[in-house]
Image (cartoon, rainbow, N blue to C red; front, side, top):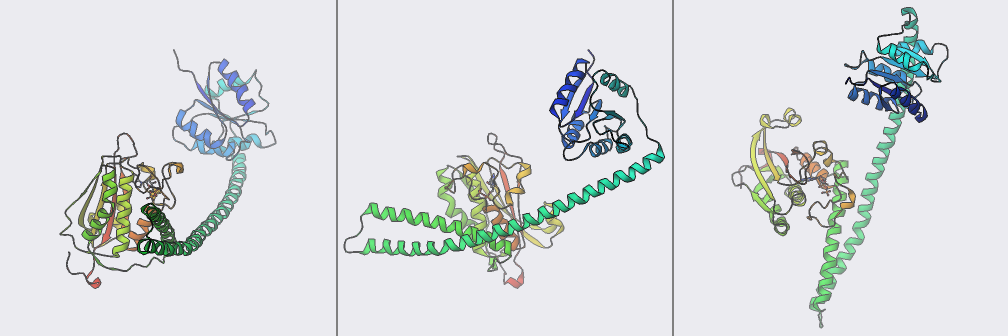
Length: 434
Ligand code: ADP
């Protein structure tokens, strides 16, 4: 059995598509359809049709432009493209041929002649336009293209400006909202501790159940405070006002503190946290509190995105700039760095998300999975943790990036987060490690 010849019809009008499909199928062709220029190009590249019927008045990229593009694609250069159009003004035929079409069939479609015409083009028929004429049309065609390009560039520039403005407004809103929330939170916190203190010390102390409620409210307020601080930190990083208190920092102390704070959560999930021996590590130049924030975030994420019973391991090494594996980092750096790798046996991260997760508010999963818990499996938070962590590491003159074989909840390929921090220089007063 011989393969059916494939005809791709690029046309936005459904009735026309149905008519041509029925007609050509009855003549033994297999018919592919695309509604506009861009999807037509994509389909042509994937399907490599034997002939393309191209409507000219289609939305977005018009039929002329789509044809010019198709003719520039290796593998489609020799595929006949026939303009099928209601535009039958003077010069339209020449314009179609100049844009790269091999033929021109005016609409309305004549069901008696179309199959025969297609057969001719498949057999090698090519319509031509005289060279002198072609030059004139080429100029007109390029002018039209430039006009359209100018229009698009203007549209994009305007859209970009609007986006930038919206982004500034959003940052301003976050900053104002966070500042506004901080004041009442501080008041609540103050009253709560007074209440707790008087509950304990009063002549008739509050009973345990009331004290437990007070502790519950306090925990909630603490969490709210942490969220507000996270929001403020992000705006600080954006505006470059994150002030670091730099000094020689022992990574061993920072990592140990982060693990200690998160250990119970890992235990609840029956996860093991393995920390390599960090005793010989030289100090880095950094802000201990901010670095603690970075590692708490990374380890917290590893706990969140690793199923129960999984493993989180932390390793450290000192490397020279030349040994750094991430190419964008290597070219921009010199000297000695300390690299901490936080590795887990979790769900992993798809290749296309490995950079996006560092964008503010970006979450790979559905936002409906938002969780108030910081550690429940796959419970997404605000999507600010990683941008914040990267902002902090970059403010240290370092880099933070993610690696993973991909995302798979069944196979769990795991993720690796690399934190690269410059070594403490002598000026920072660092002479020996802890
Ligand atoms: P969130 O508050 O949602 O955890 P983050 O900025 O900390 O925000 O992380 C952004 C996204 O990156 C998460 O929603 C998650 O999809 C992905 N992610 C972060 N860490 C890991 C990890 N260790 N393993 C798999 N995915 C991760």
